[in-house]
Amino acid sequence: MTFEEFKNLAAGIQSIVIALGFLTGGVWAIFRFRVFKETEKAKAELDKLKREIAERGVIDVKLNPSVIQNDANKYIKLDMVLENTGNRNEVLDWNLAQVKLARCDWKEDGKRHFCHWQDLLCEFSFGLAGDLVIRPNQVFRFGYISKPISNGVYYIEMNVPTSQETASEHIFSAKAGIREMILWASNTYIVSNGDAQQLNPADSKNSPLI
Image (cartoon, rainbow, N blue to C red; front, top):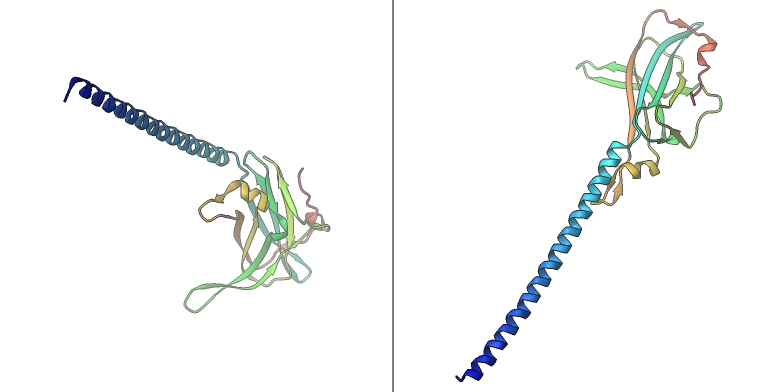
């Protein structure tokens, strides 16, 4: 091989090495760019999730039942308090709200079961429908009354879901592609036995605190 042939071969090899170097560098640059972009995207989604967790409405539900009497009939009167202890508005779908009670009975094997379920009647004459917006630190008070009851142990429960708009802000399952419903709920028991508080018409004059 002559010097001139060796020189040409070396130049060719150098060109190939340089081309491979540029190709490798380009692939590495594209890889780093994509990894960095995915990392930034994941970080942004994590920050968004942290904000959504930190900024949300939290509904504290308090149920305060009592037994009242009017002539020979007894009733369960329920004072319900809803308070938003979170730091953003919470929208409740009041069309799906449930406030009900059942008498507790025990079978021979000692297992408890509920019977005679009934919906409690809201004392508001106008009632509520649609979405109920509760702002941070806002309190709503509601009064409910049952049908005539007999002596026994009664179970009371209340539950209300968030509206679809609010639920979609709280939780979205990307994997399943569906929105999950958030349900605010509470329950309690009360015993009806013996004398009860006499019914006072003024007790039913509850109103929301705006």
